[in-house]
Length: 200
Image (tube, rainbow, N blue to C red; front, top):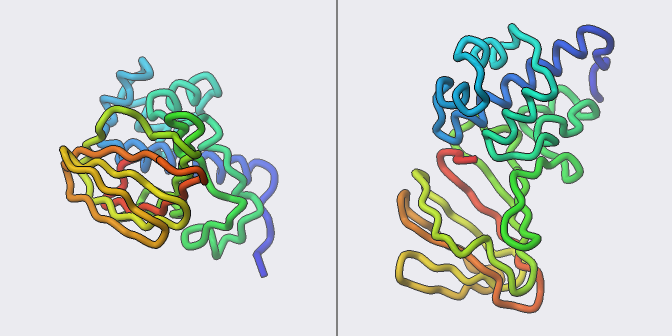
């Protein structure tokens, strides 16, 4: 049973705190300093710092610039948390309350399964349509990445090696290992990733 819902000015303040925390967590996950983010949105370091600490109001145009700078859709900051019981907020992500991380390739979607990016790792669900790819470019991240193919088939390139994974197969990539993935099959490929530390 959830507690009473916050309404009025207190609700707006709570929402501001949540947005500020999300900006900070996402910035850190992407390895950006406050100065780097400030430069990308053409604002002062002090302004970004105050936003992250909920000491300054954030306009929609500035939030759009922040979203672009952090490479997420602006809807990232407006996922429906109002219906989430306070006791669940830091622990549980219900299926209908996932945040979309990005849209890459042709119809490829990624959803955050972790409650936030503030922890030591993140859990991500990737859906790759048949005969699609997350991109032709190899990706190199400063994080360990492991995954489990829940449905379909996944082609995995690690440096100069290629692996074909079937449903139920799992994998692990060390930090800095360049890789890319694709779906060579006729059904949607669904993969759960564990990334440590968060990189989005």
